[in-house]
Image (cartoon, rainbow, N blue to C red; front, side):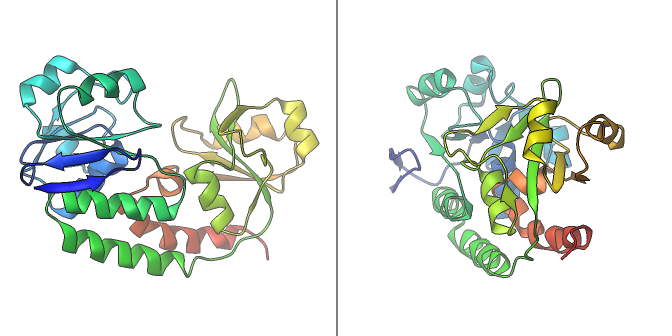
Length: 260
């Protein structure tokens, strides 16, 4: 018997190590790969693009917000991996009536590390998970420290920025940057050109996801701000899981673009 309390304070009980896992969260799908769960993982979403071989070959069960219940039923999972923010509550409530579902709810690196340990315990990869968490904790104790006031954009038309009470907001803070969206009740906020000009950021971070900002988008912002623009890898700001192992090298390089 495997038993633990997930990040929604729900008790998960499994009779044995799961052999048919469905993951509904892209970053946690990638985590399962790096934990060595290739044979165990039978279903992923259409947004689970890493690793590429899984994206090409694993059964897809719809999107993160609109899962295909018939496809999940056909896979007969003995564990589903989900997340409070990524997945739709009504979908998860329905799945919980049918299958064991592990729910993550992640705001910071501590939460992410606990999720890795939880998943490792559930899937029979405790040693691998412990080793991964040790490396992540070591990396995050030595992150480069940047400086400046920033806005982090995730969407265009309407422009949307990230608030502090998010994993991305936590990463921004850990890097020593000041997020100009300071209201803790705001997770993601629409913002106008006039508001951007009033906030007067030193740096604007344009994420590669969920909206794929490109160089041409910088020109739009230059009409109303003198901020420096940075196209950043959204996965390396937001993918809580094994992708965190790549964050420190990326941020070490990013530091070169921020004046001291």
